[in-house]
Structures are given as structure tokens and as C-alpha cells.
Amino acid sequence: MAVDLSVNCLGLEFQNPVLVASGTFGYGDQYEDIMPIRELGALVTKTITPRMRPGNPPPRVVETDSGMLNTIGLANVGQDEFLREKLPWLVTHRGAARVIVNVAGFAEEEFAEVAAAVGSAPGVDALEVNLGCPNVKAGYIHFGADPQSVRRIVSLVRSQVELPIVAKLSPNVTDIAALAEAAVAAGADAVSLINTLPGMKIDINRRRPVLSQGFGGLSGPAVRPVGVACVYKVYRRLAEAGMSAPIVGIGGIGCGSDALEYILAGASLVQVGTASFVRPRAAAETIEGIAEICDRQGVTAVTELVGAAHRS
Amino acid sequence: MNPAFTRVTVTGIRQAAGDTHVLTFRDECAAAAIQPGQFCMLSPAPGASCIYLPRPFSYFRALDDGRVEILFRALGRGTRWMAGLRPGDSVAVFGPLGRPFQLEAGAARAVLVAGGVGLPPLALLAERLLRLERPPRIDLLYGETRGERVVELGGVLPPAVRLWTASEDGSTGFRGRVTELLTQKVWPTLDTPPAVYTCGPRAMLAALADILGDGREVHSFQASLEENMACGHGICMGCAVELATDAPQPYYKLCCKDGPVFNGFEVKWR
Ligand SMILES: Cc1cc2nc3c(=O)[nH]c(=O)nc-3n(C[C@H](O)[C@H](O)[C@H](O)COP(=O)(O)OP(=O)(O)OC[C@H]3O[C@@H](n4cnc5c(N)ncnc54)[C@H](O)[C@@H]3O)c2cc1C
Ligand SMILES: Cc1cc2nc3c(=O)[nH]c(=O)nc-3n(C[C@H](O)[C@H](O)[C@H](O)COP(=O)(O)O)c2cc1C
Ligand code: FES
Image (cartoon, rainbow over all chains, first blue to last red; front, side, top):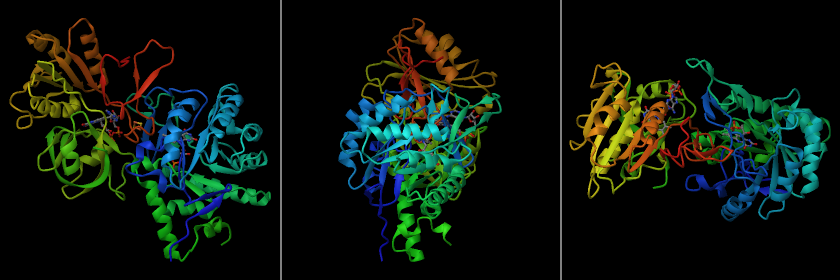
């Protein structure tokens, strides 16, 4: 019997639980011949900010053991060009896939500005709010660092849009579950975790960090255990607090078994990130892999498995 | 041709000099479509994962029987993995990628300046330039730090290409840098402004840009650049190359998608 991969959450129907992560699939067009977006549960766009950002100087990426570091610096085309040049393509090519636009700002007003602009555009199904970017005013502490700031940003975005909001959380905090609670209390419909972890690689010949900014964000299989633990912890905490909000699991996912770890930990949806750089069809392979494993285990609907690791 | 992600089988690997090797695999579609300056991303087949991200390599030769050659230097763990490949091994290839050199059909002379493993795209370019209806006279300048690294190009370069070799230790060819070879030996032989094509370490490209920017007349100046890459086709935004502008904000292009070949006069070299 065919496994039912569809997931209903955020008031939306997803044809399968596999999304592609912000910053790892561009705006969808580049992969079209290899991994068309219509096969996905949803595409999450690269972060959009109100104004175009050139990004950081090179080197911006470097490989590490089982992963990579990046300091792209949120390079993006800005909200106006996104709406004019990128979104129309996405909307006409998406088929049954959902479109989630990831947004951020470097001041609270910027979050409101970009959310309002993007949130009212036709074809956008939900917003993912990137809380991992630096707050310029507070001296480069990121917005996701404390529950108060998460609450303020999420409420502000909530007041601008009617669309479902997903709050994307950074793992570089003492208690990610407290942030998730704050986000949901402030009106987020779901939380996605994790964003990258801070890391550094040093060139031993030149005796200095490889990346132009010294630090970079770690992603890839190396972060999967961290992501799975975060999802597990947040799922439990939200349940204890009597809050029901779906969790989107991210970090080092590249195949069906990776995705299932997250789903069993409590994720309703998952995102494939860096793996797409290594294998452009990684997201498709993840969808097929989930179906295959469910089939082998006699599972008829993938949603039966959400949070199952807490029950057995 | 749109880039394709495929698994291919290694058909051969040979040492070309010192730590430099030539890897051969069969990739019919790519072989027929490759243009000089384009590159591919190579990675191990799943399971053999000593490296995580794919590595970019220029195409060195595209043979008529559908085989493709990559010339590479074993520097770090990715290229050492490649040096250990054997016929029959499987690798993943993603390509052809990037914007190639433009074959300047109007130039009567072409000067190709290669530094180290900047050689492969220029070897392919030389061959393609000769296929033009009115091919230019081609001088290929090839420099290495040490003579033992110099790759033997007999059988690879068409005889019509004039090859000049330099080594900094003086053990092979001209003693000194390839840029000195250009200014001292080759430039005086030019009778018309050449189309200049180059690929090599950034410091060499920057030195060449200084030389050409210093009042020398050229038909054009195309440089193939390197940046660390993750995706190889314009998605991760990892491979920024800064172009020279008067604007206060930096202006970046992507090495993998807008390049790797850039107008050498537009790059911000330092
Ligand atoms: C478009 C493009 C085409 C290229 N074509 C060729 C080619 O035809 N033949 C070839 O031998 N190399 C080529 N390179 C360089 C090649 O990609 C690197 O040498 C390779 O990625 C190093 O991988 P590694 O794992 O061995 O080294 P790593 O373990 O990643 O690093 C080891 C050392 O290698 C050097 N290195 C790393 N990345 C690069 C880089 N991008 N460029 C130069 N040096 C680097 C550094 O000195 C570093 O310390 C090309 C690069 C680009 C961007
Ligand atoms: C090159 C690169 C760029 C990224 N850009 C963004 C971004 O713009 N916004 C964002 O919220 N996350 C961004 N991320 C983080 C990913 O969306 C994801 O949260 C993280 O990489 C962990 O997942 P992975 O291990 O599957 O890649 C980026 C990651 C990478 C590797
Ligand atoms: S390598 Fe990813 S954008 Fe160029």
C-alpha cells in the first residue's frame, strides 16, 4: 500500500513533509532541470531583507568535517526585486508545492517592513522569520538570543500579516525551548530549528581564520545530532506547556533516515539544506527514502510517526 | 547544455608531474558540450565520504570518444582522495558549469598565461582557438614554482601553439615568473594587440592585471578566477568575486555563475 506522505499543518496541506532550507535552494529556478520545486512539500526562499545586501567579502564558505561553514552575510536581492523578479517565477512553477518566504531585518522595524511587503504578495503561503541574524542596534547580538526579543519580533510580524508564521530559531542559546515557548506565545504558528551553529576553521599555514569574518555558521551532517536534540527538547517543552505548534526540523538532513530521526523526535515537517549542494536531488531522495522506510515498517501515514520517540 | 549531475566511472589516472595528476572518466554528454573555461564539481560516490563538499575543477581535455580529462594537483584532502582513485572507481560529477572564455575571433594574436594548475582551461582554449575560421597565432606561457612540477605538454597541445615555459627555480625553461617571461621575452615579439587569456593563482592574475593596465594595448583580457565553492551553480552565494566600482558599497559577482571567466579589467584585484 502506498504510504500517505501528506501533512496538514499551519492550515495548509503539504504534499509531503520535505522542504528545502533557506539559503540552500536559492529562489528555486536554478535547480529546475535537476530537482523541480513542484516535487517538494515546500520551498523556503533565501532570506529576504527590505533592501538588497551585497554580503560579506570572500572567502565565504569552507568545508569542515562532515559539513561546512558559511559567512554569506545574508546576501540577497532585497524585497522589491524579490517581488518583481523572483516570486512570479516561483508561483508559476510550484505545482502543488508550498512557498514559504524567509524574512529578516537588522532592526525591529525592518522585520515589520519586509513582513508587510512580502506577506501581502499573492502566492506566498507562509513566512519563516529568521531570528538568527544580528541585531545591528544591540551590537550584533542576534535577535533570537533571548525570549523577550523573540516575543517582540514575532508579535510585530504577527501584527503585519495574516499568513502563518514560522519562527526559525538559532541553537546558539542556553535554552532553545524557552525561545520556542516565547515564539508560540507571541503568535508564531510553528517553530523551525535549527539555524547554523557558530564555528571557525583556521588555516595553519597562514595562521589565521579561513573565512573573511573569522566565524561562520556550521551546517551539514555534523550538526544533525544537535538539531535532533533541539527538536526533541522543544517538542517535550511545548507539550508540557500545553502549547500545540508544529515543529520544522532542520540540520544535516540528506536522506530518509535522517528525516525520520527528526520526525520521531517531534518534527511535522523537515528541511533539507546543505545536502542539496552535495547532491542536487537530495530533497527528492529524502522524500523517496521516507516513503521506503515507512513502507518497510508498515507505516501507512508519515504523520503517525511525529514525536513517536517520546512514546516508546 | 544544462549542467547534469551524474555518477561516472574512472577510466584512467596518471601522474603528469610531481604532485600533479590527470584523471579520465567517460561523460559523453559533457564531452560534446564543454567549452574552455567551464568546470565541473567532483565528489566521491556516497559511502566513500572522506570529503563532504564537492570540489571544482576545470575541464582539461574533451576527447572525441566521450572521455573527459581533469588535470589536478594533490594539495589537500579532496585532491589527495582524487589522486588515490583507480580505474573502475565511481565519482559524482556535476557539470558543465560556469561561463566559458569568449573566443575572440577578431584577434590575430592570442597570449595565454597559465600559472600552475591554471593550465587546464588554457590548454583546452588553445585547441578551440585553432578551430576558428581564422585562428590567431597562439603563445602559451606556462609557469611553475619548481621545474619538477612542469607538466609535459607534448601530445596535448596542437603543434601550432608556441609554448613558453618558466620555473622560478630555473630548472626548466625561463628562470623567473611567468609574468616576467611575458614582459621580457614574449611581449617584444607581438606585432598587434593580443587577446590575453589567463588562469592561475590570484597573485599572478593581479600582477598580470597591473602589467596590462599599465598602458599596454590589448584586444581583450579574460581571467579565470578561483573562489571557495559549495554549490557550483549560483545558489549558496559562497563564491563572491568583488568587481571594481566607484560605489561605496562593494559589488560582488558569483565566480561559479557569472564566471569563472571575468573581464580582467573589471575585477577588484586588491
Ligand atoms: C573554477 C575552478 C576551477 C579549478 N580548476 C582546477 C583544476 O583544473 N585543477 C586543479 O588542480 N585545481 C583546480 N581548482 C582548484 C581546486 O578546486 C582546489 O585545489 C581544490 O578544491 C582543493 O581541494 P582539497 O580538498 O585538495 O584542498 P583543501 O583540503 O580544501 O585545502 C588544501 C589547500 O588547497 C588549497 N586550495 C583549497 N581550495 C582552493 C581553491 N579553490 N583554489 C586554489 N587552491 C585551493 C589551499 O591552499 C588549501 O590550503 C579550481 C578551482 C576553481 C574554483
Ligand atoms: C550557504 C548557506 C546559506 C544559508 N542562508 C540562510 C538564510 O539566508 N536564512 C536562513 O534562515 N538560514 C540560512 N541558512 C541555514 C539553513 O537554512 C539551515 O538552517 C542550516 O544550514 C542547517 O541545515 P543543513 O545542515 O541541512 O544545512 C544557510 C545555510 C547555508 C549552508
Ligand atoms: S558556489 Fe554556490 S554560488 Fe557559487
